[in-house]
Length: 319
Picture 1 (cartoon, rainbow, N blue to C red):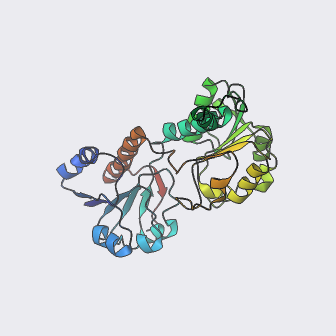
Picture 2 (cartoon, rainbow, N blue to C red; picture 1 turned 120 degrees about the horizontal axis):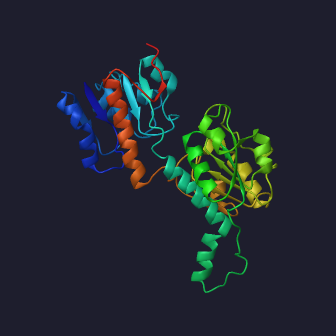
Picture 3 (cartoon, rainbow, N blue to C red; picture 1 turned 180 degrees about the horizontal axis):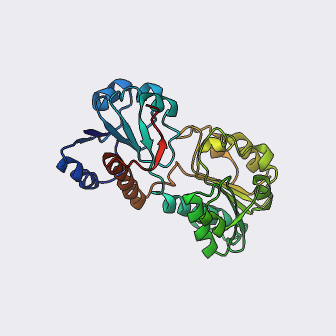
């Protein structure tokens, strides 16, 4: 079979070569590209005859996906697959797997870092120190003893809950179908109750039609004035304008935002100008360690498919 990696996975070439070695030994061909194909013609040239395609998070709307005319299996090196046109994949007979789990530690740690930074005013304190000022106006709050509400209690949400327990936090969560692991790590509550009770809210749910716009004015107004919202999930889950208004009016104390409706966000994005909003450019998933993990999972998906036992399947082919 012809296997093509259509974009880099942010790991050394030596890692890619190590993972692909068994395929070549088995007689499969493998090609890896060190840049994205930004237009359909170039994507077709690279992978139009590929049986199996690997990618990271390159957008694959219908027009791009149709260039992969020979493809029967797509391994996505990312947790979310909302950048892949699911209906077109089904119609084309392409099975799609994701790489869930590679960034559980990385995302949980960034969410935790945002919590600590906002609670302890680390950014403003750094600026004050460099300007020769004192701690006046910068005395923060401790994470220990806070109630943290987690929206979406999959592997990433559960990992964050485990870390928060070490910090002495009380964990509550909202999840429609919680796992046994989730039930052991926190108290399940309804979404409005979570927004009312939590001192900190961290979003870890996937972007679906049900979660798009989930956090809007109706939930934000229920938060405590001292509460903080963290979003390392997906930008469209939150109404950015409503969140900016809540921050600028002092309705809530702060926010940490790593994801946006379009990325990178435009300089005019309301959250880039909002009061006490800590922003990062969708970096939560990306650490040196997590990039290696995702390559191993994405390549492992292909191994399973070649063995006739595809796993991590998120889109099943309709033909």
